[in-house]
Image (cartoon, rainbow, N blue to C red; front, side, top):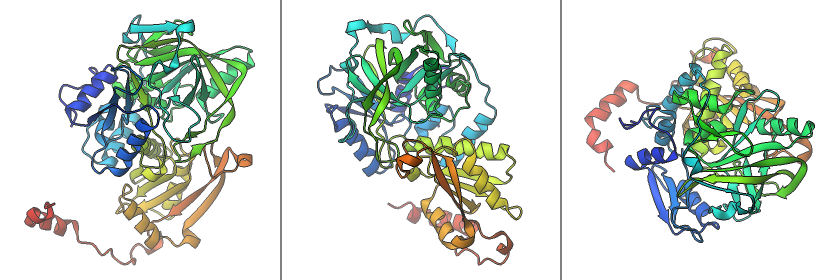
Length: 486
């Protein structure tokens, strides 16, 4: 349960959020780690090898840096912290959280940001020759990374030069030197890429503000599937129930969060590209080194006293952010298939080994012939699953979509591959899809797996060998001492 003193109105920034997280025991402080590989490797080991709740990791006294210049990893890597960020009830049940979030989305009223004149982000400023991106403990995250990546758990802020709406997107950014960095927008469909190319077609430079320490809700918004021409500021304001306070950048005029930790402000210029990467990406493989990544020339940087650099450690799952992707994708899929007219959806989940994009599971209570196929085709193409998907699986309502064991059991015992698997081709993909060769980048196929009991055989299918709910409840009560024993 969220502490009583926390409301959507009281949380202004990352620090207030961390105080609440610390209060319920999910913040772990780590001192004296090296920015070169140790921060990334410790995060990998903690999130992949520990059991129990994954804490947020706050690093301080980092090698070569003064006390107070900190790194935060794993902001939303537990259901409780994710619920806190979304201002929702947390009870440890992933499907329940998805259901609450999707219902909140279905009634969401966007709230535009509020422009204010001042904020903590202006506590420290540097411009011109005083800009130094490595003033902050920018890590080398993985051993084969091509450099130090300042942008991982970040939001890049751009504005459409024709329509005027601001976009927040999460894109990787590698430091080139004191005042320049690459900004890798992996697909032509990414909104920042669309904005950049509009500026370039007009022969103009593209302004950008990169926020590398911010309220976890803004990071969540930057990675969410929000409709084109809709600002993530409005989306996040609607989720929080009040406007997000923003200030106008003194160089670009772009709106960035007044309570951010670190903001880097500059421009991208037509034809100005440079090789960057590789970087260990969300699929669990190194993203290719790219020769044509746009360069951001940073003209001004802003940062708070004792700034917190937010970092993600993508890689082989589970990672510090895979749970977030699973929850957000599932909520959007669930809402969108119902909007398309699909009845009797009982749950949707995106399996964590697929990092919220590769394995989507939809559970239905079958109502008519073809219901399961309708669910498969719709779920594969709605917002939340259409980009970079791989497998969609439909199961009956007695299957827990969050359980790998349940899902695989349903596939193994209810799916005759000849009749139950469909392949659809030339769906939307992207540059980071490692199995797609370079000449076919941009498209990929989808496997649709019908793991429901065949509709026409429901009445004759053998019953599941499992105790009834009533009998299990009776035994839990009678033998509760034995069943709770460690």
